Length: 227
Image (cartoon, rainbow, N blue to C red):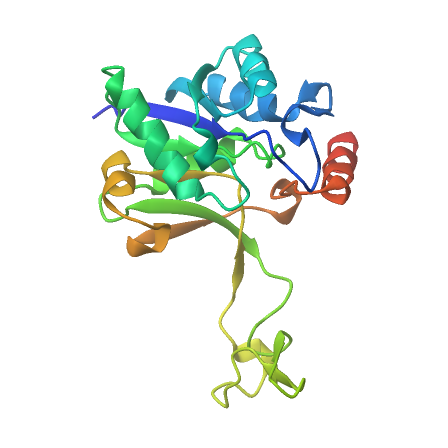
């Protein structure tokens, strides 16, 4: 059965780590246009939306052929929940009389993803799964080389345990990335957070999982694009 897939790019205007990052030129395209273009090039994706509170971002989104959702200012602050922005976007689309089966989020800050990464996420959203996230192998393990400090300033292993004596025996751990998220719209609307559901991870290579938060990340992404 064919499923209607709507892609969403969430891009607010108030970035402090790298002001104006969502429309900053990366490899000849505004940052958010990378996600728009990728979604438009996938036959499986039916429509592409950009949710934003910013007029400049909205103008760029329209320039590249995306449909714009006006995000309320209260959902675009530093402390605002991305989940609530997801809920707002889904509710808005439904008020337009549009129904769809799969919600696909392609954050503007992960421009190095490719169509295979996104397709793998869509394929992983089976009947026994509520949400698909992307992950990359973590460089540090909480079983051995991640520590926390106590009130006295002394260090303790985050997951201190005697269960594993050798590094080779610990289970693999992963970092969540912002490459893509796929979910059922009704799950998002009826729950308050991602991990309330059945979550399946899709592994993405580290070189395609750069998440741009500041100038260093931006330069790293540019270097990888140029390589």
